Image (cartoon, rainbow, N blue to C red; front, side, top):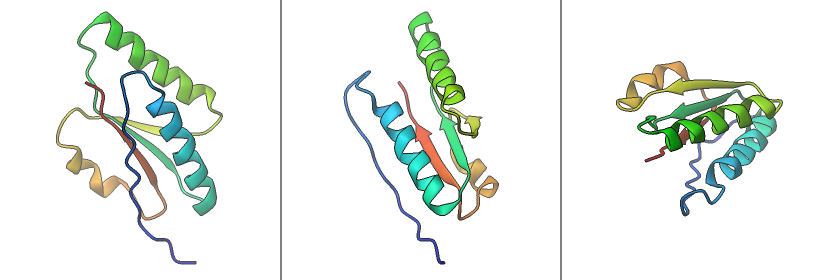
Length: 96
């Protein structure tokens, strides 16, 4: 079976549930194609609120029952390109 490449863009307001929704979509896709889950986190913990949000996201992924490979990379995410293959599902989260 040939896999096709696709991009799903999710946007919305602050703390509207975008990340948890995107994680569910990524998990569904990985299960469909037998792929691995990757999470690229571009946010930086600049204050206590942001540290709490990052921690909550990490805990949510750990509790999901699915194996996520997390990449913490604020800039130059293109350097990660060689780490992935055609069956990988990549969730890029940009939090500002």
